[in-house]
Length: 185
Ligand code: SF4
Ligand code: SF4
Image (tube, rainbow, N blue to C red):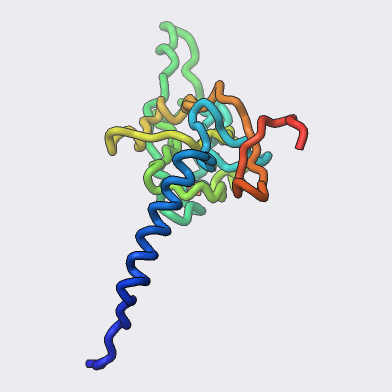
């Protein structure tokens, strides 16, 4: 073990440190410069193609499982879902040569494991995922971020859907300030 000890500040240095901290607190009390966003009243304008939550368009999916195979975080599970069967043919009518499948395979994403890399969106041969930039969701229960198949068919609603959209600007005095999109600089 080393005998070296962390050098102690002098009593004067410690008192000065406390005075500096109090002075900083007082300065921001009398002249506040808010650098945080007033969310959800304000929300950041996101860049185009920001990768947020996405949904499955059931009619486009062919159940090929490519999305499950490519997912690097094992967030996709292929579910076996029953397919509605057509009514039985009338007496004397010719039965279809090949009856349709009784189940279909469809992906469901566990949002707790998804890293929003969009590999699955890009690999899908039928563009069966509808992307969105929605990203600001929170959950109370663990089970809520594991959607059911029906839940995966619709996009979630963003809490900042109706927020004033702002962009961050560097400001010499305040560090960061937020301006409404379209404001003059
Ligand atoms: S976005 Fe990436 S991590 Fe999320 S489900 Fe798709 S492939 Fe998996
Ligand atoms: S979503 Fe696309 S990649 Fe995934 S199973 Fe359906 S068709 Fe295949």
